[in-house]
Image (tube, rainbow, N blue to C red; front, top):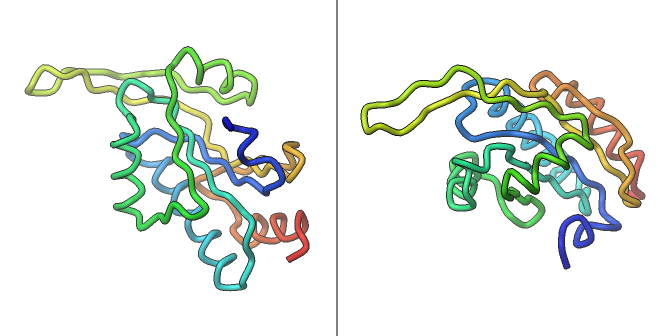
Amino acid sequence: MTFPDVLKGKVLVIGFIYTNCPDICPMTTHNMYLTDQKLKKEGINGVNFILLTFDSERDFPSVLKKFAEIRDIKFDNWSLLWNTKQKTDPLLRRLDILAIPTDSSYIDDGELNYFVMHTDRISLIDQRGHLRKNYKGSTVNLDKLYNDIKTLGKY
């Protein structure tokens, strides 16, 4: 099976990130993590958390794995997704996610370093694959996200 077929029938909380982000992406990831922890504490299962990178040039699966490990993210109900720019960009456009490389420079070893101006978003998808709501990922009201998730299932 492939994404999104493998996740049909499940509630999805999707964040759009890149691992070199200095501000919004770590906050978005942390807010999703806190939501997951609250759901688990309440015995609510069946919710899957997805981080989709839009930086395919640097965020390879091994980088995403380390990103998750540093944040104590468990892969029982989390997926960190990578694909080529050619595959990711059409999905981002469809979901109205902006991701544009901006200020760049070369670091000492000659590697190009850049930041990405991007949409700050967490999306809630229901069991039928329908977008239910978008939230500002870095400043989401965690109680609102939690309650919206609860309304989608029979928890």
